[in-house]
Amino acid sequence: MSRTRSVLVNHDEDVMAVLDGAGGGRKVRNIWRFDPSLKLVSNSGGKVVLADGKFKVSLVQLSGCKPVGGQKVERGGRLGWVSPSYMAKNPATTVVSPASTSLLTVIVPGTDQPKVSCAGGKVTVQTADGAVGFKASIF
Image (cartoon, rainbow, N blue to C red):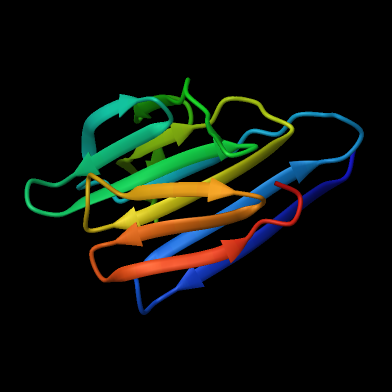
């Protein structure tokens, strides 16, 4: 199976977008591990919001310009651990995506209300610092 990944990191508007795809009509899923201080606030409609009390981060997932719901969020468990130092581990909040032939994951720090829209393969993300637009080639 061939798998592709394209990554966009924009430090000015503070946004990251990751496009995963699989060849031959196969499906991919991805796993995102977040800092142990971040806890689940909400999970619906393809948007997961995590926060530590004052700081928020949103993860939005799309396939073909449509929100993809069904993310599984766990803390600790089989997948959710990070190692801050030798022989130490802390439970982390882990987001497991649903399976899809193409999956665009947009991570927007600092907000629980990111505005993500797309049309004709162009995605626009409105952040607290401004708008970011990009083309998603296999999207």
